[in-house]
Amino acid sequence: MYVCNCNGVTRAEVDEAIAAGAGQPEHVLAHHGCEPCCGRCLPEIADGIACGGMARIGSLVAAE
Ligand code: FES
Image (tube, rainbow, N blue to C red; front, side):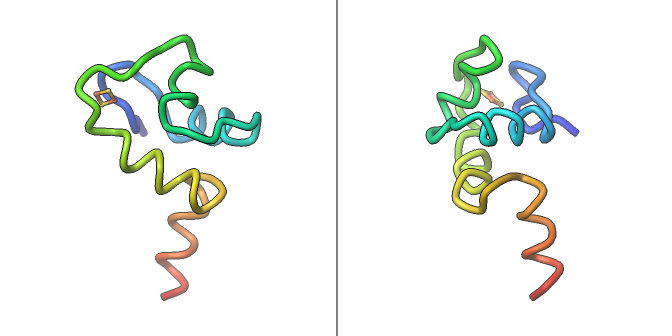
């Protein structure tokens, strides 16, 4: 599933960048050689960073 449609960056690729130390949405895209275009994905990526990864967002929502 794509998080960033402009650059074709998937949830797994976002998690990979977060695990590698990306602390800003722009750093997540840069990790994959991309940069923001429309910027619509940036809040979702920021949520992923805050939760420690995109995979954790789903588990946190399911736990509520
Ligand atoms: S969806 Fe990521 S920059 Fe447009």
